Picture 1 (tube, rainbow, N blue to C red):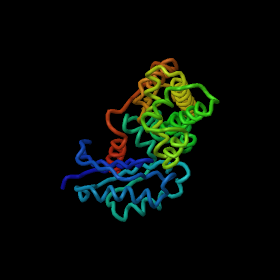
Picture 2 (spheres, helix red, strand yellow):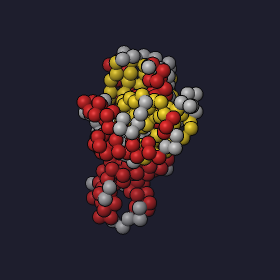
Picture 3 (cartoon, rainbow, N blue to C red):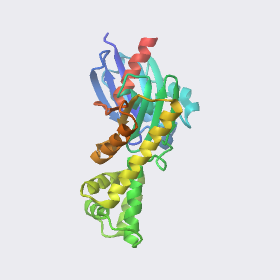
Picture 4 (cartoon, rainbow, N blue to C red):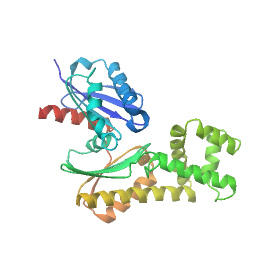
Length: 298
């Protein structure tokens, strides 16, 4: 029977599952609901993973699985065995769980040392040096500097200040009102507070568009996001004594040409030997690679 390997990347908005063969070729891929331990808890996160697993047509050929979860290396580290027991009720063969940050890092490099910057809906900077690791940011939505949620929240504050007459005018306000067909600030709040975790990150897209149009406030927000990300890289590299290393950039915020360019400039001023990597494949393939390597070690 052909051996297949399952990689799972749990996230705040969705969970990706990919089956690959031993040559890392994609065989099957499905999407399930959110699996952030911090936002959804252990049981709901496991249900999302298992719901995705049930959708797989080739599940009987899986010999090894790696599941990446947000916050499992932080406040949920003591729940690792409980999570494995819950998942193993359906997922057989070799099963390991770990950090979504490691998954993201491995999606871009084979190295055991380096740094990953995650700037998606949430964000974090995680470094690895052999068995040692260090983290900056990644405290959750309210502290994930540089993430879509953080950028969106900054935008919301600028827009509401303009509406009050407390702040400068910004093109972001016009774009938000046009895109969401709003009449006034009350309409804005109805839209935001019906689902803040979904609506706030959407504002980051408008920040990027406004910056491209030369908007001063949007440019300021993205520059602050860049500064925060770079500070995280500096802190983590210092803690782990990393000098020349792969720097993997993962997440939708790096679709912003301005943010990407600013990060590149700051990193290259620090060291020309830091290898900036934007993975060609989604982070879930990092989980699949970990499933293969864990199987080979057995």
